[in-house]
Image (cartoon, rainbow, N blue to C red):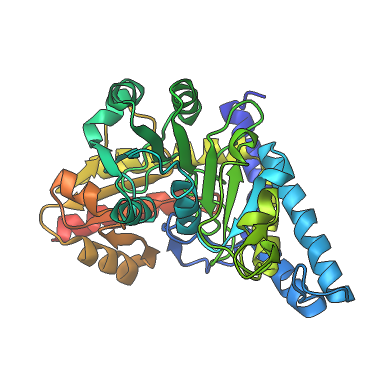
Length: 408
């Protein structure tokens, strides 16, 4: 359904009270750091507490009622999450971090040749760090795309592919500049060239509809904490059915092992082979409730709302003196943007915003040192919105920023 401007306003007003009730953010605060840690809805927190209060068991840890109920809850939530993304529940795994998922995928590559990984300097440490560890322990290498390559990413990627290219490792939405990649066509291109795709959707999930019913990268991973608005210390992963047998975890143990001898072990099949140790089922329930809430609110509605907020932010920041917004013309973007001032340190801007109007933003290198090196900066101020942010909050931010810069 195409949402018109008037229908959008009507729908959003209807949901405004529900959104306000779900997110326990003090009314005097303006939280603009969802890309780091998103605010969890109350229903998710309640679901986690209910699990600990009434169940508290572990999967495959006995035949008593708590263990059985825990297993039932885990599989029920797995089905709920899989349905949102239109995948088979067997493709979905829960891991302690997205870094674990990246390492699992990289170390499943064939060791018969030198593997070349293509990735961009715009990626954050959660992707680049594991890739650097991988090449440190193998004879592989990384071929970095530059920021300017984003203008024609598919063409640049095609040119970089060679006979030793094994992986394109990328974010669906980049952390530093909020650049949105055409992941569907990237997946098609890499599949045509027999290149594995590993996509991190941490900053895109929860902000718009992501449907994998027709095409998906070989491996999709995401943190629970940013766009998904779930709890900390858990991540989730989808593996395409085509490569499920090829992909094996680097870390094994606990419930992922079904039998073991002195010299060997046998892993569970499909998703559970990645679920090493004791799964944080309470966190899974919280994640599931957050994703279901966002789906119920309407991901198209969220997308349109945040698109409007970004336009408002870009116009306001560009009209503020002594402020430079980092942007690329003609590139699709999401709900993340960054800026700097020539006259005021980024950390100082963040501190003043909080002191003056309780506006909370991120400042620093943004876990993106290669991006910082590319643009020749040490730190930036980053803004990232979500469904709980309003146009009035953005207006307050812009007016406050203008006042700060005018006074200084």
